Length: 459
Ligand code: TYD
Ligand code: MG
Image (tube, rainbow, N blue to C red):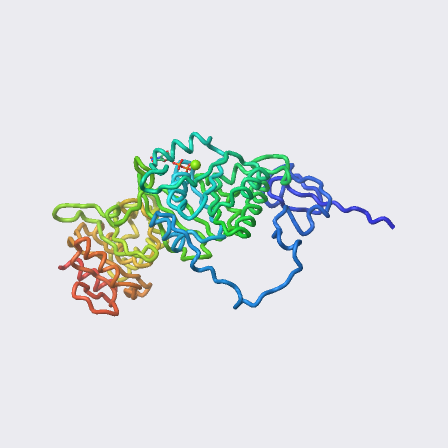
């Protein structure tokens, strides 16, 4: 008996499959994108994402001990902050997604990295957005072409987004690093007829990721991300790649590179850059960006926090303002420190120091526009709020660190000694915080919020 061919409906935008036709794809929300497809077309290689080697070889396993750990196969990008975020350099055979808003500096960062890494082999820069001439102009501007600094002439460029063309060029050049600028321009007619869909991007990216893994190559996939953080497209690539980096800009010339996922390093590290005439520059002493230099007394409402960003200690200025509440309830305006954290600290101050804040609107800011998520910022936010509400300034050259418990205790922190060392190098001579493992003459230990505030405001 002849077997009847079965059909399914596959979304041409995201690759989602449904047994019945629907007007709207339940996965990506697009209308009229479900297209009838023979079921066998999708089996096993749904939208082509199955590993390519599976069909070719008989499945078998290996002893884990026989596998080369590959720990030493990292290539330096020549940019210290970039290497730090990557976990110590570019890992061969890995795929790295670099997301960020248009204009943030993704192409610049990768061209600079390519210039330094070309000493290790050929780099293939695939530009689907800009012409070869535009990329060359950027390279000249960055001063990365030839010359005494980098030497070599091993950056190759191709301006296409067509997957099949890229694959031919890859086989011919065998680069050590591939840069795809950007994933949104990749196209193959195997993934539907409309260019620019999520399905196209996923299919093509997966093919390139597989190629890189099989050929000892590192792959950078640049992706544009919109302002609202709607990264429906690139977000769907996150699970396929080894590392996901996002480039953010918080004020005019300071850019942060954060790892959202890293199979080869910590996700706590951030890279800090400034963009200048000749591209991106590492910020070696970031505290200078987040502190405001002042002569004489501090204004009320200002406190300096000694916090950690990844493995690095930073000193940042926390600014607080309290003003009579405009509405019936007090509100918190804080976008650099989590609002719930600020509300909790305000409640602790109200409870343990009888400081009335519930009739006030509270504003918190961090100088230099960096977002602080580390718990050690609690005590500095409390000190800044107390100072703003009472109009008494904090003493100069004093830094504060500590996590606050709901019982009003100052809880111990990691790496107190590192925070103090960084602070001392910036001229701070007094620290208020939890007891540290090593006794330190400049640290005044505070056990609870009451004693911390007493020490800070009666010295
Ligand atoms: P670009 O790398 O093109 O951003 P993206 O690839 O993320 O869209 O660079 C963006 C901005 O940086 C652009 O507005 C110009 C500026 N820029 C400099 O200020 N100095 C430089 O040396 C370069 C190359 C760019
Ligand atoms: Mg670009």
